[in-house]
Length: 331
Image 1: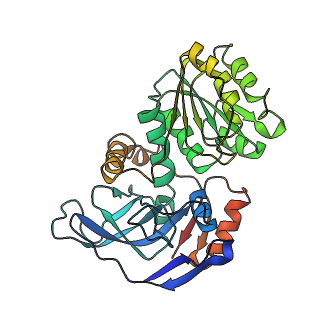
Image 2: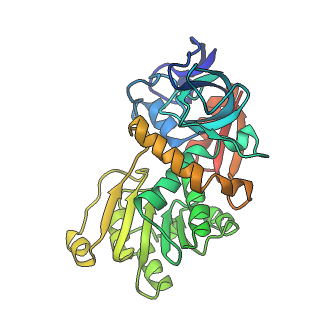
């Protein structure tokens, strides 16, 4: 089968198409003929040599999510049969014509959703769903601040929080992304490209918009220096989960405020979790969120679709931060 391999750490030019052995499904596994995949920033980090694949995953083939149809199943598989349309998350290896996954991890592609649209769902929506509800326990009537709300995970979190009945405040360094996010239900837009991201910025907007109380929860896809403002922006007994570190992994923490407000700070990542943990994430999403795509209450947000022959251009485009929603590769 064809696959895109990282030939050496470096720029987009190190991504090359290669012929590799087609994987065979083991007990409890299915093989999926991949039709489309989403491009994630983790793919870019892996390409540069900063985010190695976990054990058991093809080390040189990136790709964390896929959409396609089942083309082979192990003899003990009961959920799927060849021809079924499925999507899901993998630890890597999705930049290929086929992937092998545990049958319990795969999700049915909603009716009426194309392979390209389906490829925009798993990484963004499962990450956001787990962060908002499993990690933060967000509920109706609460307020949530989402940093990088114009990103793939940010837009998924915005939709999920709104469906749950929460009020959503969102930050972005791009005013045009904030304006488009309003069309998906963003209540309060915070432009961190005008200085609001520094020490005296977005937290003041949050306090003003919440009558001084602060937000109940924060989903931080940025990290770095945003931590200090996050602590100030949280309400008493507020909760925060860190999902991304595009602004850096180090920051100064005011523990006095953490104690005084009785705050909860968490970190999360899906890629390094055990198989059983990943299955639990998929099951929760299948039960509570997947039906909402059929109802039209949730929808994948696509920016641009590239062919796999254009994988280098797709990586360059994501690195430029010009996309609103997901960038997709298709065979």
